[in-house]
Image (cartoon, rainbow, N blue to C red; front, side):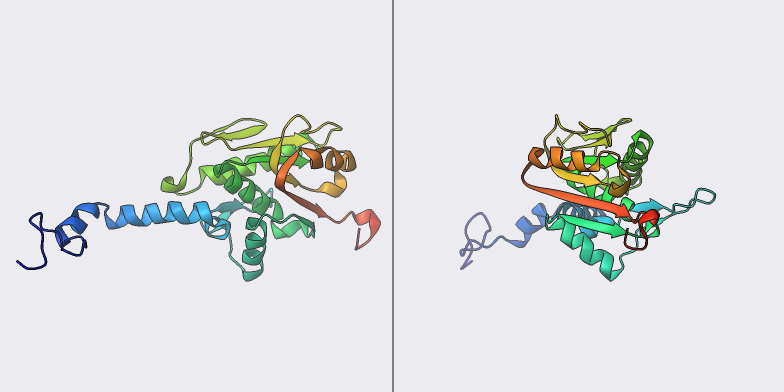
Length: 220
């Protein structure tokens, strides 16, 4: 009839109902999962809504969902923007878990991420949080990776490398993201900071976290 070509498509080039049905092959569940994958790749705050963390209580560790309190979402958006930050933190606020989650999110997108901690044990603990976060994501959001004692490498090319604070920690690498946890207690914090600044690629990001040093008073 008028307005249709012989192949059934509309004269104006609009697809017919049959063509639309052929394209829409995903089930509702598949569509939701595909949308989740897209959203968490582009948004760190949205990625955090799928993150599981563990309480710091050594006698009764409890796994729970990350809590999207407004101030935490604001900070997640700030980190997502690529801006650097130095934070003097309260030990119980869970910044190390958020830093680990951010390292995972950036590495999943192909970034090289350095984690520098006070010592070897602390470096392994922080890296283990990264591995825990990836392992406890919903199945449709997990990405193939290789967790080792000192690194987590993603098949997409991104990786997280953990270092203890030594005079030459990380100097042979180039990073897009550099996280220093408990910086005030690092024996070589100044040397690490000075050595790694030139290795951070153009537009790189530095996040420095530390609790106060009690010996220096409330503002230590």
